[in-house]
Image 1: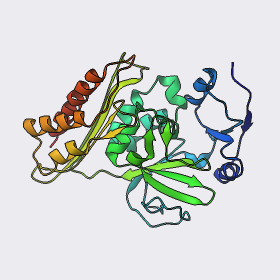
Image 2: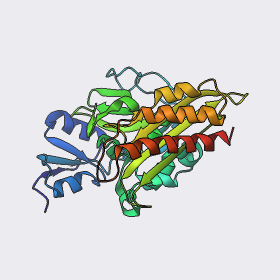
Image 3: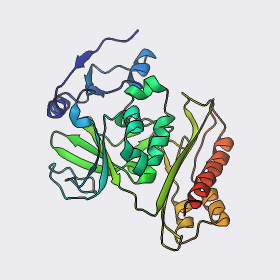
Image 4: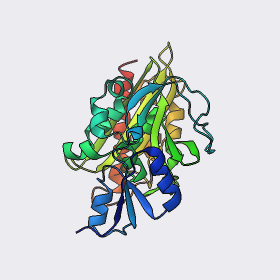
Length: 306
């Protein structure tokens, strides 16, 4: 049985932000509810008020954008900051099903589509939102590694303005993020990948579907006209208190051709970046070993496209 709470239902984003400014931290935003409602049924502490933001049209949509965004330094500014061209932007209230159906995600952000396809089941995907998956800040959040690999930033909006934070800095621990009580995660954006690039996502769970990740990873590589790596991003989930950016593994790739020995070295460093634990889904040793295996597989797949 659910505990008692008041339910607020703002009709616009500005109304929602005003309510948060007035009543935070006594109010918790609620979109799909696939995490929040389960936790409340399990007896987790209940906020006095839940605010349903699932119907706010300003939080939906997937588009290519050259619009105005806040600077990338964490400052709160008015919503008319500098211009950043050719970004892909998704609203925080976008569901996993919407990600799967949109051609821009399939064409420009394949690892995010791959992750969305493996999150939960069709009923969960119809309700679960990108913002909810990230704000919940589970170390095993499936959308976090692909978005980090793509170079995504979150847009955090309050009544006073919007700030942008790189996603690999946003999640700071288990169920902990940099979001403030009066803010909503309104959107995510990342640069459209260049032509000479490829990316992928891989997840290991205890069953084929509707399973929490034992380990997951996403990789993106950009290469030059000679087939040498110009830029790499490697992110691993369910292997530390928050998703891991494997920077030493990325450095091992830059300037190198994607050959087997280079890939093996990068995969080794990727595993070394993890800090896994033993739990009911797997041992720390297994997670570290599988991190190396799946990063090697992803890089090998990308190398075949160079």
